[in-house]
Amino acid sequence: MKKRIGSYPRVRIEGGGRAVVSQAGGVLLVETVRKAGLDTAISAALTPWRKPRAVHDPGKILLDVALAVALGGDCLAEVGMLRAEPAVFGPVASDPTVSRLVDALAASGEKALAAIRSARAEARQRVWELADGHAPDADGTVTVDLDGVLVVAHSGKEDAAPTWKRTYGHHPLMGFVDHGPGGTGEPVAALLRPGNAGSNTAADHITAAQLALAQLPARFRRGRKTLVRTDSAGGTHDFVAWLSRRGRWLSYSVGMVITEAIHQHVLKVPASAWTPAVEADGEVRDGAWVAELTGDVLDGWPKGMRLIVRKERPHPGAQLRLTDADGMRLTCFATNTTGRPIAELELRHRLRARAEDRIRAARATGLRNLPLHRTTQNRIWLEIVQIALDLLAWMPMLALTGKARLWEPRRLRLRLFTAAGQLVTTSRRRILRLAQHWPWTSHITTALERLALLPNPG
Image (cartoon, rainbow, N blue to C red; front, side, top):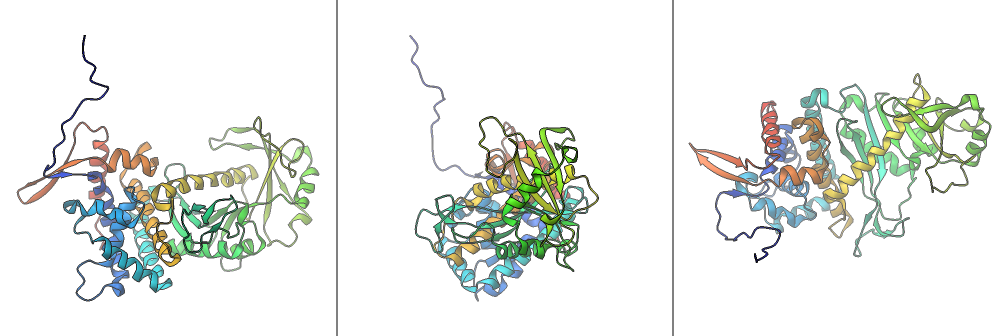
């Protein structure tokens, strides 16, 4: 009779291994920082916060925390992952030094936030130029999605409050640039708000839109080339008027609440006015139709606004709402885009759902909770999270191809970043050797080769 030894082989563990690098795949993010010029930009922006005779540069400290978050960390102390690998990440500040910098930046308020954001905007413009045909502005337009995120707090943090989902925490308003079907997306705005902040507060949407536009290249900060999309939370008179104000002329596609007036107009739409909705591949969407509403339902709204409604058969088991009609689920949105079929405009608005993917990636990258106590500190944390998400979007855009460009943060970490390596020094050169049997080693090496071909900043 053979003795059962279990499902997994037994391995003897010994400490003292040398020249072994954990998180070796993190060099992809390091090279992305270098090619984007983000390290020099953020170091220059945070120069006022560098104390005399300081050993560590404030920009490097902040980037180290962002790298740790991109690798899966969710608090400031996770920077210890980088500190353990100085051969790859360089000298890393101690935990107290990191905390003191965050406190100093938080005490500076808007001045520090503006400095960090300006560095991000500068690096973003360079990355889009390097990405060329893969950049989000490759077709001459940019789409910005605004959406709220509920962040649960498990302790009495400043400005935490009950949320509309009966949880407790904060309700940030985020903005993301959509990379389209061939990519992911990158954050361009994060407005920290209490948990009880209103979903359809126009002032907050205007502030978030201003932050997002400031992150874009100058040619996209006004004009029809920039599309702002929101759900029904953005369908307010003040926000739509701000988007369409003379001199700003932004394109918009915002969800609208089905009011009684809209409901009555839908009931009067003749059957011949309904057009079949379409899918992303151009095929007809089964059981869905769209129509445009006109008349006094547009009174009080900016000139040029179009109101488009969709009716769709609900999926089995779904409960209808009071605003639905004839057994059909109704949704509505407003836009100022002309010259395109309403079915195409409705599909464009429906693709706003990709923002939910961006939110899921943000939750997996430092936004699961806000780790610090004071609101000013957590505003700095939100900027760190956005830097991490920037790197997780820029690296695939510049270095990965095919389906790998669509990988979300968790998959990038499991397949690429957590790969182990061996550091070898030969002829005064340091070489990082990755495991040959690791299935995704070729992805890492090919990506590094693509990054190496890009021109260096300056």
